Image (cartoon, rainbow, N blue to C red):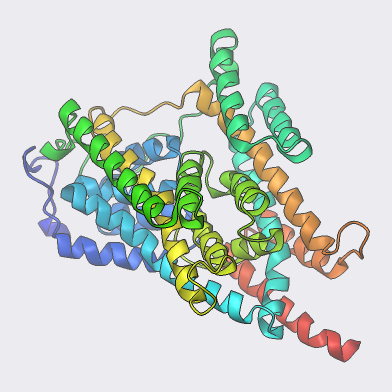
Length: 459
């Protein structure tokens, strides 16, 4: 959209009308974003900032960061929620659904295809070689994720102690992730009363410092009518959301029974969606505990492979739940041995639906509350405690991955020094040279493939 068609601060659209951005134009942008949103949440947020704030000027820097700070507080994938928020602000409820849905759907279809290849041909030398190189890289990526979050969140000894306690609790004693979140939140609440300075947050992504010219949704553009706070609207959307969830769960329970695999996936991934404070890396231990240990939908090794595939596809990393669902549906042969692909695709869709439904509701219900003030949102003390605990949980995940990658047959088996070399090199690339995730995965996949073909020759 050219600059001469954009609103200026002196000619803002009236409060009762939506910004003048064609729904079709927005639709094609959100579809494009679904295919190019690589790089994890940081990369995805940067892409949206470049496209929406700097290039297209659909929204101002200040309003963009205001929405982002809210999404950072919520459980769930913040980049997908940010897209939903901006789509909702521009084109009401359907705009939010389209923006958030198209952020996820390309990744779902791609992962269904990749997981089918993995399950059907995963033992092929080429596929096994690629995964061999990616696994140690994923371990390094998880360590780097813990470092990135920790460097921002752990700014005093109390928060470091919470992180350490969370690591010991989940790694040594297998304490369920929800209990760790609850305990950390409670510690944060109590700490805010007795030592508030220790639980004071840095304020998310801060305030806007740049201005890129007039935007369609500018700093002083009035909030459109559909985004104004209303108890009636909030109550209506809450009821609709609960009805949608209840109908979906009811249909699964009626068709497959409460103990059926698809029904349990719906229930399990609903709980997982409400625990994703700190991003996908934080909830993966919980997904592992449930999907591997409790339900036995897949093995620990397959879980690592799923994260490796998730790192190579666009969309939120939490889309690894689609891999978990697909493998679970395939392994359990939900529709019989002759319909494994259908079972996997159905289970992947169920896992994705119940994982992302809460994210849409958080935005559609909470958005008007956020739009009622354009001041900076503050993180709560309980959330600060939870974020500290998340660092320890992510580190425990890295240790778990390293154990399964370096000692494939257990501690009594041989140490895989080649995987160790790849992992160390990947870590150096991330920490020292700031190499991008996609580039790192591609190089490590190539190394793994080369090693797989060289081993028979070298004996």
